[in-house]
Amino acid sequence: MGLDLSPGQVARASRRLHDLGDRARVVAGSALELPFDDGSFDVVLSIGSIKHWPDMAQGVSECARVLAPGGRLVIAEADRGCSLADARAFIDRWRAPPVIGTAVLAFFRTWVAGQGIDLEDARRLLAAVPLHDASAERVPGAPFLILRGVQSSAGSV
Image (cartoon, rainbow, N blue to C red; front, side, top):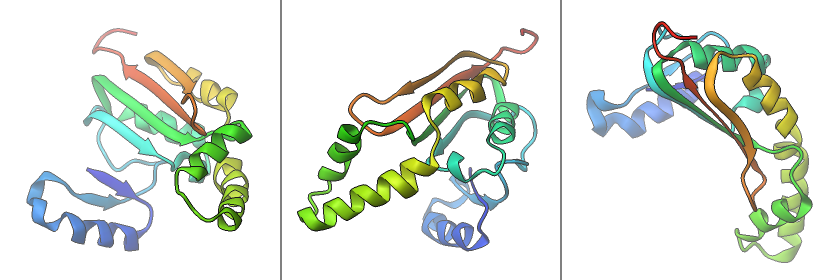
C-alpha cells in the first residue's frame, strides 16, 4: 500500500503497478491524516517526504498509529546537518561533469537537505511517539538520517 498527496502521482503509480493486481496499490491522502485504521500495517516506510509534511510531529504520530503491535517504522530523510563532505560524496557518485556537479551540490544542500530535518529534530519527533527501540541516526558517509521504532505489543506500554 502506498500513499501520496497528489492525485496525479497516485494515478501515475497506479498505472505502473497495474500488472501487480491487488498485491500493491496507491491511494491519495495526507501523512497528517492517514486514511487507514489503527494497527493496519506491519511496516511504515517513508523516504524523503517528511520535509514536506506541514506538521512533522502529527505525521510521525499518524505513522505510529497505523502500525500493528510489533510493527516497524522506518523514515529516511535528507540530513539538514550533514557535512559538506558527505553531501559532496553523494553528488560525486552521480558522475556529473564538474560544473554541473557544483550546481547540483548547491541545489542539494539548499533545497533538499536544507529543507530536511537535523538529528535533534529527528530525536524530538521520535520522543513524542510511544515506540520501542526508537532511534535516529546519521547514515555514515551519506547526507541522510534514518529514524526507526517498533510499535509496542498489544497491552504493553
